[in-house]
Amino acid sequence: GIQVEQSPPDLILQEGANSTLRCNFSDSVNNLQWFHQNPWGQLINLFYIPSGTKQNGRLSATTVATERYSLLYISSSQTTDSGVYFCAVEPGTYKYIFGTGTRLKVLA
Amino acid sequence: GAVVSQHPSWVICKSGTSVKIECRSLDFQATTMFWYRQFPKQSLMLMATSNEGSKATYEQGVEKDKFLINHASLTLSTLTVTSAHPEDSSFYICSARGGGNYEQYFGPGTRLTVT
Image (tube, helix red, strand yellow):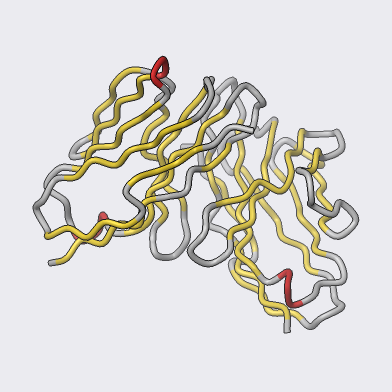
């Protein structure tokens, strides 16, 4: 089956710093989403981005489907950005496969 | 829009009893709902997919007689953990998709502890 690897697995930032999270997948996909899981476990939709680039405030994402990767950019990080970031891909099976996750901690 | 609720948010039960978890789409019709399980510091693992009015499709290795899923309406799916054992303790999360939208929207999760 498809493999979905995220890097880095852990990241510690000082408040105000920028970061790039990466999601690599081993096969072609029809859909891709980025999520933020907050400390209470709730998954928050960040981007639905099977291809191209999107921006929402301090966050932006780019998916290059032909090269099988997606990037999530966080600028001017805040302590509330802490949590786990997951990408999830749908390889044409109508169900998502979740990546390994990036655990982010932003220090004040 | 696109809000999914889960109830209860946490539950403690004794070994051998059954527990039902509800997942509701509050402001859209969910043609497909998904149930995931997450262990501490791990990723989400899909357990099953359910479409309204039809039987759920379980992932390999998931016992369908232990994890009963019912998707009786376009806004409600339930997961029943039967004869729960301590190893069933986990964080269970549902998601829903519908309205011609490919995005999945997630509920807040249910933390199950079996003693």
